[in-house]
Length: 445
Image (cartoon, rainbow, N blue to C red; front, side):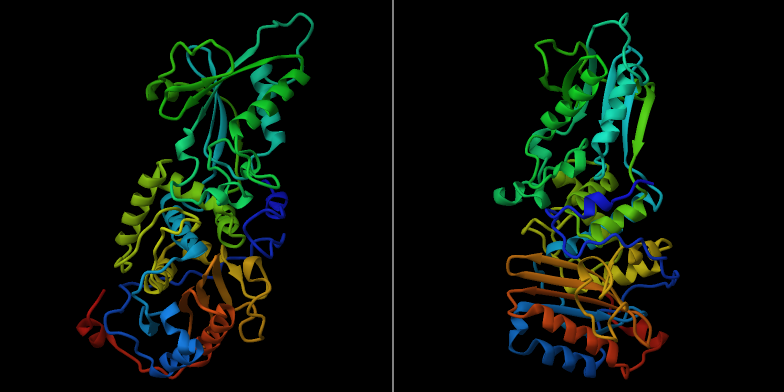
């Protein structure tokens, strides 16, 4: 498995506290049945009071929900009010990807030879695709590796590169200024180092061509690159020659031979890159692959339908991307806490929790919530945009896990409030119990 160390240590990533700590062993799976009991309202008065005290006079800026391991809503402050979630959006896209694709799924970058003899390079958005891997692909395209001899043909290697059209490189409502930074780099299928250096690579196709051209020239060859969009229409070519058959039918692709393949790390490592390090590019690619559509609008719609199918309360929820960089996203704290609870029931739920940052130890939570009772006991996802702070995750308590979601849109000191809410959620244990009859009689969301 390839290492992400070089990628996560890039100073330009939209994540803080990146480290090279290996993935921890997933916590044991805790299988449960049923739906979250939200309709009865918050059922732990002591915790509700503690949450209200922590927020103080800023209640209008906050949405906070706490759900216990039975799906019972213990405390709720504006939990049904949809707000901008920032990178807490990644909790949705990564859950969707894990459910649809499984923990061993890998993104592939492949060199194909079609029945007509033409070569084609196709990718799935591997965030860790490196120059060395592209160089290996170039050598295979040149002649199964090795340099050309003096008697070899001097005809250039003709290589079709299939890529998404430019209008799909970013979700339509990402701010233009964000697109120039590494955290807002274009989302493409063939993305060297996630299309990011110290800033975003604004023309990733041209960069790919330069790398391929240099690698082949060093071996004594030449390359002729023909760019074809993924809807199978010619959008550009490196020479005036057009591809004779630019519309390759799916049957032709199925009959193609894979000459070389480079694979990403497995899904559980990709999840960690998205959630622990808050890597936007990875979250966007995972949502698109899980939706089987690289059209951002369609992928968002399919993700929304999946979220609804999980029994998550959907009032006000709006999904516009997979990373949370879009300010058009809307989530409620009830929706997020319910999703966290639902994923704890999932057969693969341990991978989901293991992908998150850990209070005081790892990822974007490495320097937060370092008090003894929270240290190493809160697994979560942070989110930050201008005026927006969010933190949601799984809190270990003496009474079992609690699923906490906190979203601030305009709060003055959000980190301090979040710490107080987590401490209260961990400390308050005397909540009214409920039994099966109460669940049967309660109103369900």
